[in-house]
Structure formats: structure tokens, C-alpha cells
Amino acid sequence: MSPHRDGHDEGAREMLVSRYPSRVGRYVVVVLGVLLAALPVLPARAQAAPYVKYYTVESAYAGKPEGLRDIAERFLGSRDRAEEIFNLNVGRAQPGGGALTDPSQLRAGWRLVLPWDAVGSGVEYGSLPSPAPPSTRSPSPGASAAPPAGTPLIRPTIGASPSPSPSPSGTKNSGAGGAKCGSAASRGDKDRADWAERRMSPERAWSRSRGEGQMIAIVDSGVDGSLAELRGRVTQGMDVVAGSGRGDVDCLGTGTAMAGIAIAQSGSKRKVTGVAPEATVMPIRVVTTKAEAQPADQAAGIEVAVAAGATVIALGSYVDPNVPAVAEAIATAVKHDIVVVSAADLESSDPESGLPEQGMLRVGGIGGDGKMADSYRAGGVDVVAPGVDVASLGIGGAGDFVGSGTQYAVAYTAGQAALVRSAYPNLSAAQVTERIRSTASRTADTPEDPASYGDGVIDPFTSVSAAMENDGGAAAPNGPSADDSGSSTSGGQVAIFVLIGLVLVAVTALSVFRLRTVLRSDDRKDPEPEFDPPANRPTDHSDPQRLR
Image (cartoon, rainbow, N blue to C red):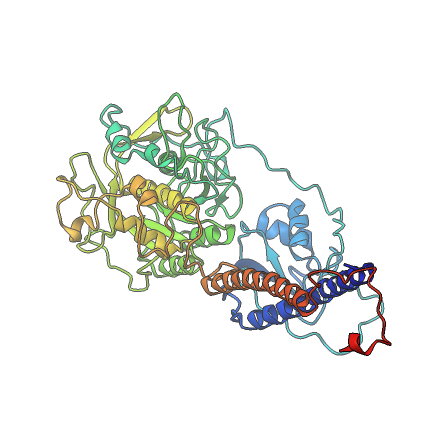
């Protein structure tokens, strides 16, 4: 092959290699554009506006202009907490177009978001109303504007921000106003009380879930946060009765016993192990030294739990779900995807029709012999759990507690709900309660009597390990649900992306094939001769015979 011929072939090949991929690239871009345009446009997931506590600023209070310090003292019990209110509201658009930028300047009509433990006349609870469109008039000279998005917040010095104080330790629990608490609730035979823990066997579920990331709000008598078995797992909580103050103190002992059943740490000397030891308890105190809660306090306790972000709410024996205000608060909690666990209705109760049918569990208590802890209304029980001769933690230095009551069955079920929510984070509150009911078990001591025993005895292990058809396809703990509407990628989108991948592979294969075909066809168009003419043969164009 001549050097000229070789140069021509190489140039042709380089031209094809350089030009052809660009055509393929354009083809790929067109295909991808068509496929991406075919992606379904998913509507944004509709979420209920978060419920908050807020206050509408008045032009004056007690004869003088309102200020953050005064508001903090009135609703939070301390002027030092004004900085918390400022940081919750700084830069947020207010009615009329203004915004809080200076803690000393408030305008009448502004709505201030308050910390979840704010209590008092004038505190409103619900979705924060959207601010009215700002006025079109020019701002007055010297008016402060809201800082642009992304501007670092410089926290003003309003007062010393109180650091979270540790749970009371080494001191007796005290009630409202510093009143000394009485003795712990009744105690029984500790040896007999081990039946409940053996029956529940929560440790079997711990390889799949220990309640991580879940907060159980216990609406009862408070919780003794000084106990070693609860240390680090109990928040400061809220004392609804006093209107301010913490909920991690307990005079009556029932709330502490509930917390021990739900989250007590394993390996303690007192040998009390909670169902979900890595969950957190938020104690909400609706009673102090007297075992009677006002209806308004009961409802407020649930509202505080919702505002604080609880994932499970356990209602103790001092909360009556059939009180209209309480039923309304429960319905609100379920709407915010919170599992609510309460005691089953008694025979003497008048059931409230406004209670949700899903997302809430009504629990009955049973003993080791299967007998009911109380006389429950027929059809008013969803599931049952240990509630007779149950061992837990006592307040202060009282030692182990053994007692009976439906509230302890509520605590077991609330701990189980925390296990399920941690194992299957994509399940809704309704799906969690359905899973707990569907996995409840029947035994010889719990007869087939739905009117009394509901769906049976709760089973923590099965509830986190069983595959269910009605829970959105969550086949494995901590795995995404196939029916999770909140996921950023739906099943249809996944299918589209898989199709795009297959098209890309096909286009690439086709490109290689086409390129090789073109190169080979170019070779066939101008084949090389089988041999060169003799180099020394003379060519005489004058000989007519040769021309023939």
C-alpha cells in the first residue's frame, strides 16, 4: 500500500471517529430529553401545617407597651427566656409586612411563636395564620427590614439563656409550690411480677429495633428523672398544672412506673427492663399531689406533646379520652401522625364518638392468669397487655414498684409502638396501630372474645418482624416502604430511570456497532489490489498491438 493511500485511510478514519460520536451524543441527548419530559409531574406532598403555640401582640398590657421580657415572664415563668422567643421569630414575615429584628421593638398584631411549654391566657394553639400581604406604602424612615435569606443570625444579648439543668438528683421529689411528695403507689410481690416481662420478652425484638429516634410523651403524674435506669432518656418535660416548670418530677409514682415499663435501661441492679430502651420519654405532668386532673389540663397535656414532636403519646389513668376537649386533642394528635395509646373504656363510661378509629389504640390490662384488670366496656378494647402485678421503677428511694392498673398496659403498648415506628419509619400512625393489632396473639388464657380482649395480647417481637401486606410493603425493618408517598422518588419514577439506563446501554451498543460498520464499509469501497504491477515493465503507448 502506498504512503499516500495509507494517509488517506487514516484521515478518513479519524474524521469518522471524531464526527460520528458527536452525532451519537446528540441522539442520546434527544432520547434522554424525551424520556425526562415523560416523567410524571408529582404534586408536592400535602402536609398539615405544623401546630405551634403563639401569641398575638397587643398594643399594651397592664398599661404599658408589650416587650419580649414581659411576654416571657408571663407565659414561660422567666424573663431570661425572652431570647428563645426572639430566636423563634426573628426575620419571619409578620402581618403588615414587618419582621422582628430588634428585641425591643414589637408591633401590635404581630404573632409570636412561643416555646412548646408556654402556658397562660392569650396563648393560642394551632397552625400559625399566614401573614396578610404587606402594605404597598413605603416604609417609614428608620424601619428595620427583615434580613435576607442566608444572612447569619447575630443573637442579641437579652439575658442569660438558662442552660438545661440536670434532672433532680439526690433529693426528694416535690410537688407544685415545693410541697413534699407522698409515698410511692402501692407495692406488691416482686417475685410474682416477673410474669409480665417474661410474657412480653421485648429483648427478642431488639435485634430489629430498640426504639431509636422515638419520643414517647407520657401524660400522667410526671417522671422521676433522677433514677439511674432512666438517666439520659427523660427530657425536662412540662408541668401543665403549675403552668410552668418541669415534668421530670413525680409525687404519685404512676408516671415513673409507666416510664420504667417503656424505656428502663437493661442491666440495672433493679432488673427492670423497658420495652424500647433507646426511646426517649417526655413527661407531661397533669397531676401533682392529688390524683385528679382537670379536663383542660388533660387536653393541654396532649397539645404540648403534639407541639413538642412526640411520635407516641401514652395517656395515663388521669386522662379521660371521652371528655370532649380531650377527644378533640387526641384527634389532632392522630392527624399529625402521632400514635395515641389510652386505657380502654370502662363499662360505666360514655364513649365519645369523636375519637379516631385509626392511629389510636385502646388497651385493656390483664394478669398472669389472663383475667382482666378492670371491667371494660364490651367492644371498647383493641388489644390487651400486662396490667396486674406489674413490676417497674418506684420514685425516689422507694425501690422496685409492683402495682396494678390499666395505665401499665398502656405503657407496654406505647413501648411497642416506639419499637414499630423505629423499625418501620415510613409507616403512618394508622399503619402502626394496625400492625400492633394484627400481630396480637391468642392464648388459652385470652379466649376468642373480641368484645373483652380485642385482637389479643400484644406481641412486640412479631410486630417488628412479621411481613404485612397492609403496611405499604415495608418488608424489612428500617427499610423504605414501597407505598411511602413522602418519598422523593415514586415507583413510577424508578421505572422511568431504569428505562433510561437501558436505553443508554442500547444506544451505546448501537453506536459501537454502527461505527464498526461504517469503518468496514469504507474499507470495502476502495480495496487494495491483490498485487502491484511489475515495477520494471516498460509501457510503450506507441505500440498499437500493446494498446489492444
